[in-house]
Amino acid sequence: MYTFLPLTYLAQAAFAAFAAALLILMLRRPAQRWQLVDVPGGRKRHAAPVAVTGGVAITSAMLLALAASFSAFGQYAAFFVGAVILAMTGLLDDLGEVSAGAKMLVQIFVAVLMTSGGANFLVNLGNLFATDPINTRLWGIPLTVFATVAVINAINMFDGLDGLAGSLALVMLVFFAGFALTIGDLNMAKIVIVLAGAIVGFLFFNLPWPIRGEHRTFMGDAGSMVLGFAIAWFSISLTQQNLNNVPPPTMLWVLGILLMDVFTVTVRRLARRRSPMAPDRDHIHHILIRRGHSPRAAVTMLVAANALMAAVGTTLWQLGVADWWIFWSFLAVCAIYFAIFFIPFRLYRRRARTVDVVNGDDDG
Image (tube, rainbow, N blue to C red; front, top):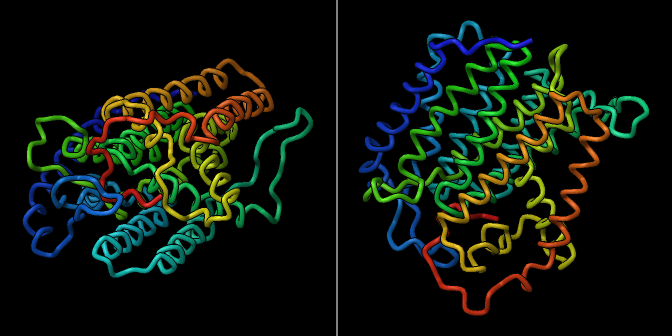
């Protein structure tokens, strides 16, 4: 089943983009007054303080653009509540008012809200072993909570180059919108498209291009947590809550680079007897920079690679390829990625040029 995209959705997305851009401009001076800025120093290599208002702008723009449609979104009430909670928590964290432990507890609470209040959790993982579909049974909610918190923090870890986290989230949401239209879920399609529009408005001030001038803006934890939550929510909803579900293994391809890098970094940290949450500079974008690539080139390569992986997964689904084949082919790609990037130091250039690459939200 395929449903054509109503033009009103594009109009709402355009409004969300305009609203996000306008809010970023309006919040510039208040951000400086309230110290809602990211100050350079340590691992943060930008030259001057940068406003951390992108996440608030994205969330507010999405809510404003969808305000007239809220009566039709009853099943997504928990999503909107969770997004607001995460945006507020992220805002306080960007102001330095929230500890890492408290932030994690909020993420867990919102993930539980998604499973219990939104009835959105993993039930069926697909037929991964060419036998029968794997039912999560009693493990469905704990597995969903773990996966949701992992994706939220994964987006935060990728918020290390201008435009990277936002562009990756945008690519994923574009595919989610296509999936929602394919299975005939117009409400989901509208939310995803409008959120994508809000991200476009933010990226105008976050991508590394000259026209942004002095208005460079970071999304902050408010943005990375909301986007991570949205990606987790719709990844699960698309694969679980419709008779024409997207096969769960297909979603692995859509989140490809994100999942592969976070898995590799986590295993590497554990092998070094460090906390999986301990920050370092060995993510794939750091490695590309040390190889001598410019920040813009690194962002382009990673976003293009993720888009290609998502296209491959989507194509396999549309061709009717079995779940187990989609799953094991993804694991094969993961194995290659892991083999190349698990020991990153051999990939570094000894004299890679130093560039202003890392924004203030690179926590992982």
